[in-house]
Length: 45
Image (cartoon, rainbow, N blue to C red; front, side, top):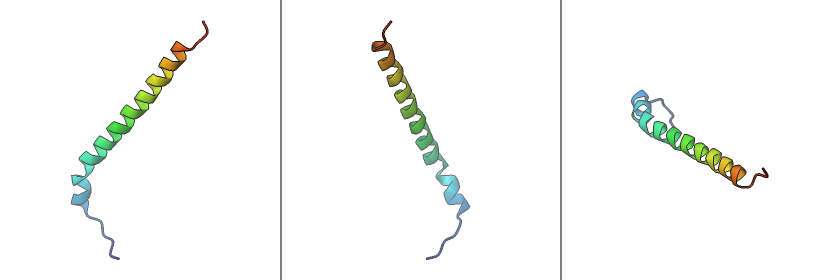
């Protein structure tokens, strides 16, 4: 097995990594909003 670092391959995949990070933040935001909504609906006031 030959391993080597291809700098242009890294640069060309930055857009894919950016989309992945955006999806992670959106999913975390949805989890937070769902938790807040459930707490608001079922809280004893």
